[in-house]
Image (cartoon, rainbow, N blue to C red; front, top):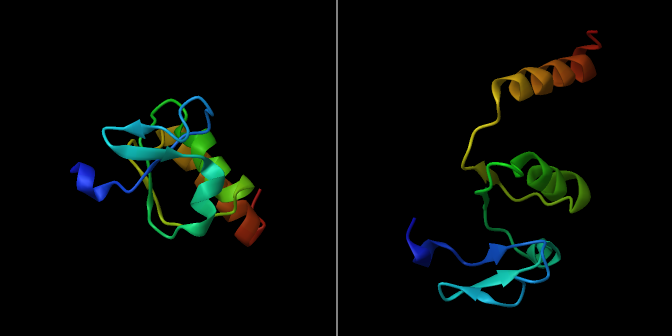
Length: 90
């Protein structure tokens, strides 16, 4: 990915916030609230937790792009939960 396409990195770790990585600033998740750009989740190990933080804690409407797709069982679980909620299927 071209660095010019990245406006900011986001990190929950205060140790990295307000610094720069390859000339691109690192901001806190709370600072994303005023932004509308798509969010790319590049973490493989914490992608679910990050996605949860974006949608359920920060309530951000930004489009989310996963660099690594969810594991198959997560897709099945999510689909089952959606059907249960929508159709009342158990």
